[in-house]
Length: 316
Image 1: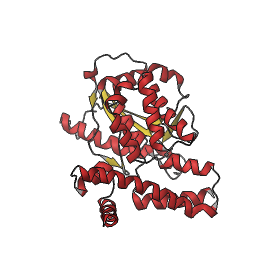
Image 2: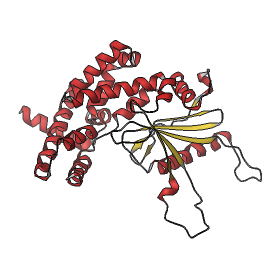
Image 3: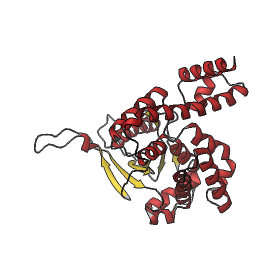
Image 4: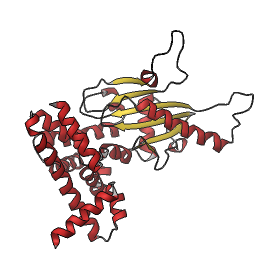
């Protein structure tokens, strides 16, 4: 039954290009400024850097790896850090990290005009790759993912020429308590997501769940500065990028069997498309073009065109 639902879910996801990254975007929003990013770095490494200008952002704009933008990349004290947020367990993150580090190091070498063909060993910033996991599947506080785990076996005595290690930290509320205690923003982020999930578990619809979580957190001083200033943007992030993972888990918990496969697919499709149409109508009233709407909603322009035609047809 589970495999059948997953198959149906993936089919629909491919058809409508569902974006699963609302928490990833929110993570970037929270830690986009150097002060908060430096505080996160200090909390993880037990360091005491105080000057945000010592932190050099190296995030590649609009860089996409396996269909997903990287979150945060920065250089400090000759350490090249790549921080990514994940709402699903993905054992292939080390490969993505390898691709990203290769591009950043290439840019670093070019910017410094370093001669890699000389007879002297050059000095490079040491790469560190951290993944902040906040999904529903069970995971330990920490675990290490290795690129070498993906390689086919070599003959005895040989070792792979490449390795990339990614350390995954579980940042769900209740995990990594010492780290959470050292980084207030990270702990507040975990609390905000937990509030949304709590309301969803109590059968609130997504919009009501987010609104209630926003109200509570702002009132209680949890990410209050960010949520108050960016409330509409945060709401739009979450609603526009419908949380299909939570929706799927809820359906699975209710014990749907194969007899409800069609209902799952059609119900999911109807709910997501209805919300997209509402968002499209709002953007059309503001005078946005199809291309602009597709970019704002992170959807395929062909899907947007089809939905606009349906909206216009219904009006006729």
